[in-house]
Structures are given as C-alpha cells and as structure tokens.
Image (cartoon, chains in turn red, brown, blue, cyan):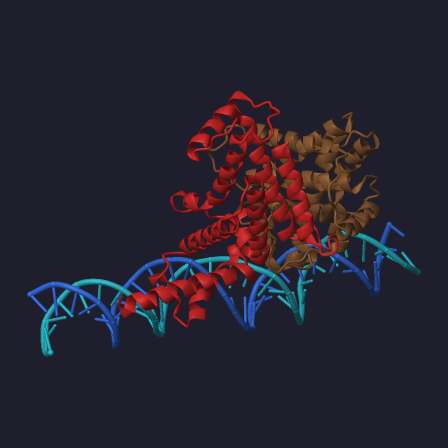
Length: 225
Length: 225
DNA sequence: TGTACATCAGTGAACGCGCGTTCACTGATGTAC
DNA sequence: TGTACATCAGTGAACGCGCGTTCACTGATGTAC
C-alpha cells in the first residue's frame, strides 16, 4: 500500500470521527463539511476530494453508526445460550451503545433529517442487521415451541406483509410470533429513545438501567407466554 | 379589546402557524425567526416585538404541540367506557395526531434539538398530560382488579422512584402495575416513532394502522393479564 | 370632547458570523516504458 | 534505473446565500385629565 492510500485511509477515518463529534455537538441538521475541513486543517474545498457532498457525509455516518451498533449487538449475543437470554443480551447491548452514543442513536432512530433521504442501496442492509438477529433468536424460540401460541387476529393485508417479511429475513414463525416480535421491537426502540432523548427528565429515575431491564423483561414475557 | 390587542393576538397565532410549517419543512434545528418575519411581511427585527428569541419560539411551538396532542387524546378518550377501551382510544388518537403532524411529533418525542433545553416551568405540565391520563385509566383497571397481578421483581431503588411517581400523578396502583404502564408507554412511543420517522420504509407495510393496532393490543394484553 | 403625553409596533441599517459548492491552479506521488 | 507523463491532493478566491440580534428612529394607538 502506497503512501497515498495510507494517508487517504487515515484522513477518511478522521473525517468520520470528526463527523461523529459534530453529530454530538450540533446535530445532523447542522452538520458542516466546512467545519470538518477546518478541523482537519484543510481548505474548505479540499474536503471534496474525500466526500462528494454534505449528504454523502451523512450517509457515511449513518452506515458507520448502523454497523457499529450491529457489531456491538452481535458481540453481546455471541456465546449466549438460549434465545430468551440472547434477546435480553442484545437489548441491553443496544441500550448501552445508545447511551454511549446518544447523537448517533438519534441519527438512526430519531427524527428524520429534513431534506435528506438515505440511499437504500447503502443503508438497508446495515440498517436491518439488528432486527434480523432478533428475529433469528425469536425463530429459535418458536421452533422450540417456547413462544406464546395464543393467536392474534391478523388481517389478510397484514398477513400478506408478514409473508414478505418472512421471505426477506427467512423467518420461520407464525403470524402471531411475528406480531409479538414487532411489539418487542417497538418496546425496545421506545424504551431506549425515551431514555436517551431525555423524556424521563433528570430526576424521575435513579437507575435507568433497571427501568430498561424491567421494561424488556415484561416485553419478553409477552413473547414467551 | 382594543385594536392593538386584536392584531397582536392574530399575529401571535400567525407566528405559531408559520413556525409549525417551518418545523415540517426545515425542522426544529433550522427554525428561523428571520424567515417567519419575512413570511409575515415584516422587517426581521420586528419579530422581536412578539418573541424574545429563537429559543423562545421553540418553546412556544413545543407547548403548542404538547397541548394539541393532549387535547386530541382527551377528546378521543371522552365518553369511552372501560379503562381498556379508553387506553386503546387514546393510543389511536395519539398515533393519528402524530401521523398528521410528523414534524411536531418529532419535536416532542424525537431527537433533542442541540443547544436547546426546554424550560421545565413551561413544558412539564403540558408534556405530562397524556401519560397522566393513561395512568389514570390503568389505575381504574387496577382498582377493579383487572390488571395483571403477577409480580415483577422491582429493585428498592426503582420502588422508591415509583413512589415519587405515584405521588406526582396521585396514582393508586402497585409497583407491578406501574412497571406495566411504563412498558405500554414505551411500546406506544416506539410504535408511533418507528412509523412516523419512516423506519419501516415505504413498502414494508400496506396498512400501518393495522400494524399499530396489533402492537397495542398485545401491549395491553400484558397489562391486563 | 379635546388635548398632552406615554406606550407600543414596526423600520432599516448594521455587526459579525456561518454555509455548500465550483473553479482554475500548483506541486507532489505514482506508473509505464 | 531513469525519464516522461498521468493522476491525485490540496489551495485560495469567489458566488450567492443564509442567520440572530441590537439599535436609534418614526409614526400610530391608547390613556389620563
């Protein structure tokens, strides 16, 4: 690898790092390529050798965050026996990552950035890694007949949608199981966002980890029973 | 009421309306008092006769949105018999409002606006109206012994926090009930945000209302038994 | 009812700052013969 | 191994635009006597 490739790789990494910092300080909507060039000690125009536009930088940061979150979740799930404990481990890992990187969580699951649409080609795969893993764990429970069997009324339209999801994620589970997974997913995203976005205020809960664990335990009961 | 008070009231309402539109088009982070003055046909400085700063305008919009959401939810709950159906009605009303006003939902429950902190004196009361109503409905179920009694392990710390919440909302229900309410709340916020923030993509679900109803039905089951 | 004065709404210029993106350019690194 | 040429990284000026906030001011509305 020549000197050019090396410095290029280093600068690209620096750009992502500076971008992360900007997300934390000014937010996605005020992300500025000029500011990043400044921080790199470059002329503002030089940044265009590395990033083709502001939106392109946002996509970079989006994929970066999706991947790091998914890696964290995968790492936490690895080696945990039993689908139930594995989902719990994944949920906790997701929350932990979000608490450590609130601005990046906001980029992934918070308000959309006005004027920006993520290019599906680049973002769909990294963006579905976590839910895919959760579904896999739930499918394990379903195949062991450990997942709640009480049926839920699902409209034909919704059943058709579920069919497509089943194909996309090669998920082996009934509509009822899928519906429960959706509920767990909504609870997970909601619980993390409420905490990370500061909805609880600073003085409502002393131990927000305990709040989260309790919430997820209840959500998982609905899956298992 | 003199002519001055009348025009002032009209202009104040116009400012809020234009602010809402800006939330929808450029988002809270790019909210511009200059643009609003422009749209009103005023000099940019004249806006300061009505709003003392940009942050002040944000607070105005925040309270406006909290109140309208709460009014909508209250209206939908009115006259609905049975705590369970009432919670369902409230949840649907909240979703409906969020779908109609995605940018305002984002202001309330989405990513925090960097550099802005809502003044508690103005926002806490309107911001807790919806959850207060849900808790009241759940308390009704608890007093009728219709709410799930299976206990949940709650740490002493969390129990103490729950005690404070019980006092603040004059809520009559055990720790288990409170924990379940928290779960329902997280599910509600998560389900709405996932839909409104576009996480499902445009082609995953044909009937997102059905998805929401199914999710909430499951969440309520966990409350009820 | 009329007049004097106080309050208020709105103006326009200014301060100092930021942004994304393009363009013609220099000088360094890499490559093919 | 040396040379000629192509590629690439970075510069600096420029375009055209935006922002929040302050300030001294004019002219209209409201109020007290």
